[in-house]
Length: 157
Image (tube, rainbow, N blue to C red; front, side, top):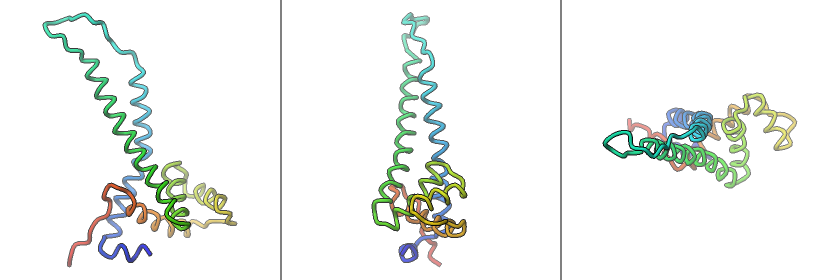
């Protein structure tokens, strides 16, 4: 299925892009938490002008933080929603999305991902080699659904 779609794309370069995007997810969560803590820290609003201009630098900083928070939140939601929508396509896509959810959104290691996957789908086990084969297909499927272009076209040779 996925091989036919990817005749015009460089699979290895596409896989690198998708992995980079999904691995960024954890960093985005950390950034969101950091920005929340910064916004909770005490703000200095004395209302007294200490110089010739009456510019509130704290307000400007807060607006920049809020903008950054919004940007990070949108990126997190974009990744999560893409995996959720991928799961709704069909049964095969649901299984592929589960791999991405366990591995990248929940941050499980490969072994725990295999156990959780087997448990979720009522399988006696889910071997690491099978996981690796399915992961590749899951990543390529994600690149088809994700609204930001992660696919890399092959160079015409």
